[in-house]
Image (cartoon, rainbow, N blue to C red; front, side, top):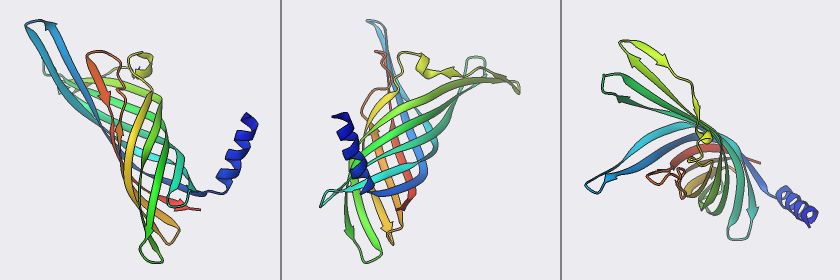
Length: 212
């Protein structure tokens, strides 16, 4: 049964149009927290650490008639930092660097705007799996920078590698050779499993792909 499934998949993908692309990705990662020290005191808030970088990968476009089903696989590298000031006026810089694999499973609908231009909208889920996530804290005081070792975020059992994204976007195909696209993905899962803290991703991406 497994062999037949693999053979069916290979034949199906061999008949699909392939897109190879790369682009820019920007994640407005939001961390929300709440504390309850006792019945008389509680506090809550949120912080945003923007992560920026690039993505690259490929998509297979399978014709289903009125729409196409576009599964793919993409690698992304993002990094970002946040600066704060502690009680003794030391500048604390926290830097996050992440490597991820994303598998989009989008449905695409397009209309021709002439012989050379096709406008498409797409939507669907994606599965994101974290390969590596490091967090490094540097402390600076009186012009002297004290470097700390990077921490592997996935060694902390509260931080999850897995996220499910819901996304949508627009794309323009030119001359059946290039595709320019922009899209947005919203993280459905809380990446932090601690009770008093949640981490969610909100990802904007734009790029260009070659059509084969």
